[in-house]
Length: 440
Image (tube, rainbow, N blue to C red; front, side, top):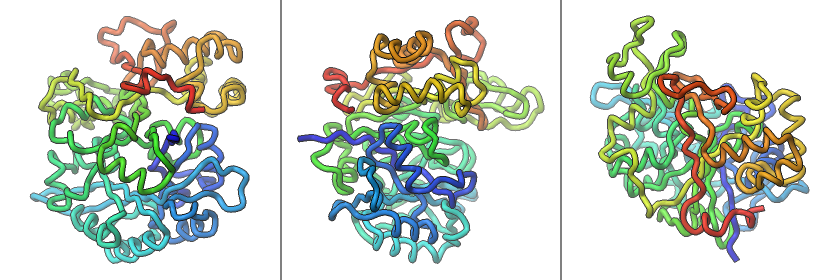
């Protein structure tokens, strides 16, 4: 019997910069269950204090390479040992700053990775350490510990600290990882891109596209905002990584994506001047801010346009599918006019929905309009379904500013308003045909 596993494999502990002080394993598990996740990354195993907490708080699930909370009633959420590191090095007269995600199956292997990487920088300075080494050196060190380990580029398109980043990245994955590219089987698309955008580069066809939250908070509008949906014989490290290595669409069913326009770097812009431009508009201005005359922060949409060798409507039917969603708290906040998803007005609507349907993914993907309307206000139910069906617009994010939902009643003509229609789609392939009710 196959098991559905929704996994968020990239997040952070409280030992990372700009992360909630309450980001501990117990709270991560609690909110992962509310979200509907079955498997989450620990994050930050390179940090010695966090690894100590992992060792004291989690217990291995047999020899599976995944872990669960010790002495806890909630055993429905499992953990995988993960971390993110930053490598800084020079290549072709440019300084390159690249973030990478590392997966490992055991605490013993994590300790060996830490011993190796500790020679290149302080692991205790931050949960996401800065290492003075090249990307190929990183992969070689990690893989020399064990062939079971996995490395892949984090948020591959964001302008800063990424594989294809406009400021310090590369144009080709092989230029970054050199001969160690043979060990790279996946890349993380990040909030500001999604599979169709990545399909436009034929050079990425052999890599599995993963989506994770990179969350610095356990709140449900952050954790699991992007995730991966597996269908496995059993929940084990090797099943997960084996599926990723082989790009097996029969086991990695689809990824959960936010609308790319929601991402903080989707369009090119300048936050200080409130300037947000599409790729074509940015090119007309030669990527110079029309207000202050400084260089614009090049968005992911424009960066992909520069490197793409396929049209925007290209479809890769051999790859795992995807579905575009938005965090439920963000949807509710937009409906009630709240400036933040954390207000009591939002929780007052959010909590009854979770109580009725079990978790957030069930609300966002599976619940019918009629079932939702029986629990919450009709307008909230309508917008949840409209987002699911791609009938709501989003004002694109830019230069570190998140995109915003633009509800139908408040919409103005889209022409020239910097608004993109959400392109939400149901999961493709067999999952689309059978529906998702068996998830929950």
